[in-house]
Image 1 (spheres, rainbow, N blue to C red):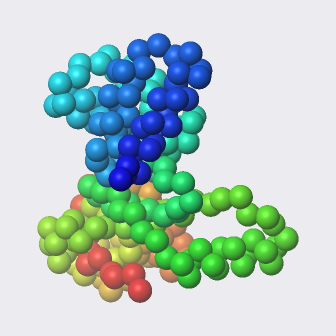
Image 2: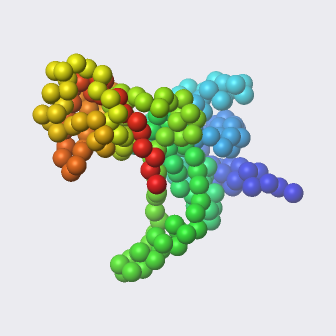
Length: 227
């Protein structure tokens, strides 16, 4: 019996012929390799997989075919915050959401019928006819959490991550500077912005404050679990 991918490949081949596209056999090779994995693929990653399968297509040809797959409903284009553009299979009649690791970029799909029902209820309450939605959760995956030390510097927190200040490693000057800003050991802070090179912006007690990276590295914190 034909599997779902065989059916999709046949449907796409018919669409390509109807549209008068050239290089159909090569385009179908891109489709087969794309469907052979459940990864969320960037154009560059797909080009690598094609090479491993014996195809050496120019990057623009790969990107062009990904655009076609999206246009005809065989793929979805995903633009997650601070991550490169990736593509995933689009399965008709199915929906899933994503949780993205802010450290390694790992993308995990999940389904939750309670969330789906709640979103439909909210739309109905507000008088909307819901056409679709996208839900993204951002956090730290179990693998990355396992690699972290119990304490780390404030400069290592990702935006949205909460932590408690456990130690100030600097001398009296650093302590006085932090105290003047309203920060002390035991305070709970939330990282607001941290681009990895400049200031670290945190919130504490309803106030926002910007720390130079050198000062932030002297503040040792313990990440808090979100419940």
